[in-house]
Image 1 (tube, rainbow, N blue to C red):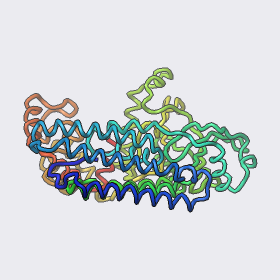
Image 2: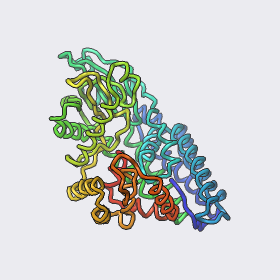
Image 3: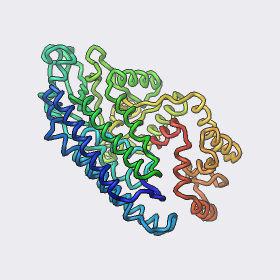
Image 4: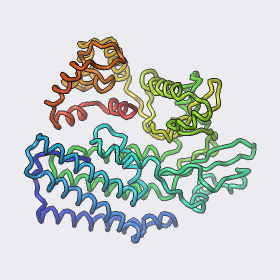
Length: 448
């Protein structure tokens, strides 16, 4: 989240009234939801005792952030060095507050923080600070997990599994994974959604939406109101494990001839909207260099294979994994090439528009061939408009007119010229550029 110049509303009685109204309304909504819930675990996470502090933390964090931006940037000349220095300081303080809020509220707040961290449109201070949420999750008690399993599979676990490890091997913000053995001795990973999530999602999304709209009302230049809508769409698809299983199988078909990729097999008879049973695949995170050295796997070959996998997704299949962080990609020392990339968590995928995919392929061809005219033409077709000349900078780290050999970088003269040109760009230019790009382009930027 970020705020820009031209703040038009001071922190007056009107502001205080809005924040008071927001606090009251949120608490009332949460109390109502809690009293209409019967699930034991859901009662715990949406009870009045739990929910009121949860919503109050969100309101107070946003209120403090609004005040910080307003007071810290007042009287500073817009687009001056002092303005941007102070803006960066406020971004960092606010990002720390958001991180603390996500850590304390947990659940969908952690997921929202992870979502924001993956976006290229937000200030770097936010993306870097919130990226630490990728590895944070507190497992749910097995008693509650067992209830979800039995209600979804409609059988006692003893009638399905020879063994079931009650301790999860992985835990995320919406589900945790358990290792188990089927009656026919096949080893499986069972992904179980935390109970009561759909109710909690409705509460949290409503609060987030209200807060975002309130900030937009306070600051007319606030341009991130779309974040909540997009997050709602993303999280709704992630909560449907049947769709995740379909995405997994489609990806498996796409990579059936790729010797470096393994997609866990799906056990459909043990899969529902809240339970996903798949083949257990062993491995370490793709960024675990020490593990690769210990098992004599060449990290450079792994990096090259990983790059080729996502290039194939984008340029050939047009079906792109939407959450490609290290926890979702494992390196296994098995396979004919000495290692295999195991791709997990197929809940979020983006099917690229075919016209966009072809134009994007042509854009890369033009950048490699240093065809300035074609880059500008395709950039305009892709929505970049007058900012198309900066696409080579984003993807290749070189200016549009650079004549250096690909991979060698820019000359000192080219760097100086580009730096001078970038100095003329304003904050509005950056926002306009990001807002002009089609959703498919933004999806691809998340994989960079």
